[in-house]
Image 1 (cartoon, each protein chain N blue to C red):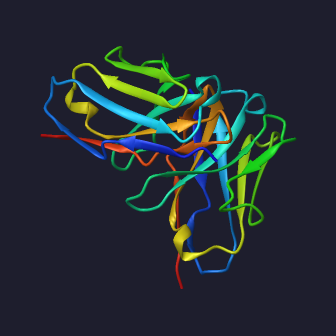
Image 2 (cartoon, helix red, strand yellow):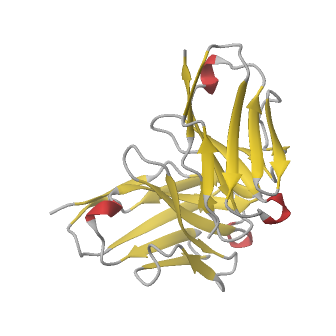
Amino acid sequence: QVQLVESGGGVVQPGRSLKLSCAASGFTFSSYAMHWVRQAPGKGLEWLAVISYDGSRKYYADSVKGRFTISRDKSKNTLYLQMNSLGGEETAVYYCARETEALDYWGQGTLVTVSS
Amino acid sequence: EIVLTQSPGTLSLSPGERATLSCRASQSVSSNYLAWYQQKPGQAPRLLIYGASSRATGIPDRFSGSGSGTDFTLTISRLEPEDFAVYYCQQYGSSFTFGPGTEVDIK
C-alpha cells in the first residue's frame, strides 16, 4: 500500500535551517510529482512546493521562494525539503503528498517548531 | 494567484441532514482543476473529489462535487457521524492554492 513517512522535524531557532525527508513506498516513486504542504497550529493548509516526477521542474509558493528547496532521490525513494532562514510564523506540521489527480496520498506530517 | 473563498466558515448540522459547502475562485479555474479534501483533528487531509466532480477511490457516493469556472460546491447528501470535519477546496489549474476551509460541526 502507498505510504509516505515524513521525518526531520523538531525545534529550530529563528533564522536557522532544517531539512525534511519524506520516505515513499508502495508505488513507483519516480513516476509521480510530489508536493510539500504545511499547516500552522489551528490554521488552514498552505501549499509550498512541487517537484516533477523526474526532478526537472520545481515550483514554489511566493512565501518560500528563494529560501526553501525541494528535491528528490529516486535511488532512495525519498523527497526532501531544505528550509533556510526559518521564521517564527513557520511553525507548522509539514506534509508531503503525491500528485495524481490532485493530491491523493498524504503522509502524517512532521512538526517543525521555530523558537528561540 | 487564484484566491479561493469558502463559505460558510462553519456549518452546524445534525446527522442525516444535507450539507452544502461553497468554494469560489477569484478567477476561472482552468479545466475545472478543483479538488475537495476532508481533514479530521490530528489527521492528514484526505482527498474526496478531484476535477470538480470525480470521487476519489473509496469515497462514499454521499459525497458529490459540482460547479465550473469560479463557483464550486461540495454536497454531502446525508451526514454520517464520521463526516463532521473541516473541508478544504484546492485549485491546481494555475499553481496550487487552498481555500481557508469550512468546518462542519454537530448541531
